[in-house]
Image (cartoon, rainbow, N blue to C red; front, side, top):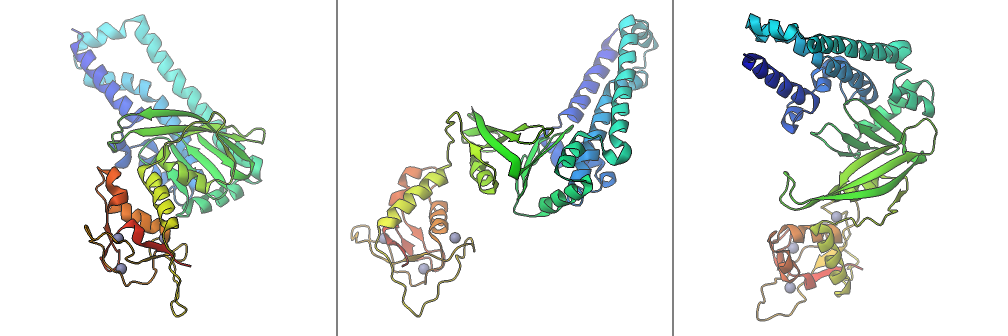
Length: 360
Ligand SMILES: [Zn+2]
Ligand SMILES: [Zn+2]
Ligand SMILES: [Zn+2]
């Protein structure tokens, strides 16, 4: 007799869970409350802060309506009149209907309180007001930094994202927007957890929990989680101090460890004195620093003897050459990398690590 009800309840629970904690596929396809209402919210790239201030509020309202939605849809899906009557006469049913009406009413009242006087009471806006008045001026500064391409961002495709811009540390969740200015933040690496298998890559993955604290009163602190591979990028973007109080060991990536070995070997090789007529340009790989290595066949290994003379002028920096070298190796056998060869990125002549010379 309860079968129709049970089926409907199961279906409604699954749909609700997809709304509350959407799977990655849903988020990527744009099926979250914020993304669905994106047009109304004004677009994250244009008005990052306003988008999240309104988005968190609307998400909260939408989620609070889910229980009421169940009772609203119940008579539409459960056609058996007896089943309807069986449930609707129970006291627990009436109590549940009552709660599902009161709950969103309270949430909507909170939302209205937040929205009046240009969102002055919204928790995130209150934080911004600590950094300057009116809050929209501070928001505009954050929006501008968010639009820059060189920000640190992680958590794309999940409900919790962390964004670090030149002067702000930001965490977005469905219901909250956390913001702390870098200049009055201090960060502490508090915890590490390991996952043997991540569904993204087949190597072990380490997650680090970092506590972000503000020196100002009325600016709530928060925790962020990054994986160890993103940790260096995050540190590059941070101006605030990051303390590792509990000496959490951060696992470095294979390429980090290889680059360190590569650098150590190359530093012991002979140097290449740059002839006066050769001009050193920026590294072709990163365009950030001047080229700093030249390939010269210096190894004498007549048995293997595969290395060839490269006639290219110095065009790469040491790190980019190391990354290039690593990328051309058998990724499953890193123990062979130091003894292997690699083609020059420009002329393809083979070289080994002894042939990499720093310019001077
Ligand atoms: Zn480079
Ligand atoms: Zn070459
Ligand atoms: Zn060689």
